[in-house]
Image (tube, rainbow, N blue to C red):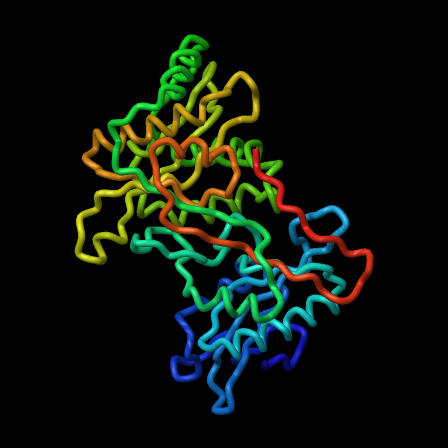
Length: 345
């Protein structure tokens, strides 16, 4: 490893192509994501074989714990990955962290998780596509799965969910309507999305509120993929109360294949019993909109196992990829208990 100071080594910030054996990495993400440090592992020839960033300040709150987060992870060999993970766990423990959690680029608003079961589908847009070997890196360094996730796909977009139809009827009587994103008022739309998202996920696992300016900056990275007809907003009494954010899977075009798949990326609803069933309606309307626009399939992306969102797709979608977030207890403190992984509402 190369830790000449408590902060990032300059050579780790901007290694030349000849210095690293790893996939490309934007060093500006270290500061942009608020990492406390960035660490690398070099082989005898001086080439970087593993890297990761560390967070020990302002990490997700967990009762009885002080989490240390590691993200921006990549490793060319198992030995380098294991060596780096063991070293950075010692560093996190030195900062009084009781548990290391990763890989996670600071928080759950950004890239996190490892692919544990690849399945038969190619990678899709915005997916954390990681080598299966990285799971072994974490396991060999004493990490175990903390939470499990899945992605599912349906190619039967004509199938209507009876529960969704019932929810549509009930909610329509209450005056709730659905409309597409208004690109002419994108600034206002983003403000509403931020408000709804914070309310919807406030009880989620490892939840941290994200300042609106950061939310807007993260969301702006998706602007090139926007198709307003696929982003649906639920309205009640003149106010947005839910939305579903869908994007076409443009990675297919890079493979020389037709873009025939829509990714259901985010579904958020104000937590109020008045809106019970709205998630089902938004999901069903996603399928209808995709079908009208000529798409053939919908991917329900990155759902936590056991989360109510998985029940929305269980009737008409098949799992094709699985993921896990890992953790490891730090030090020998007798008062440290295991982290439970409660499910988001």
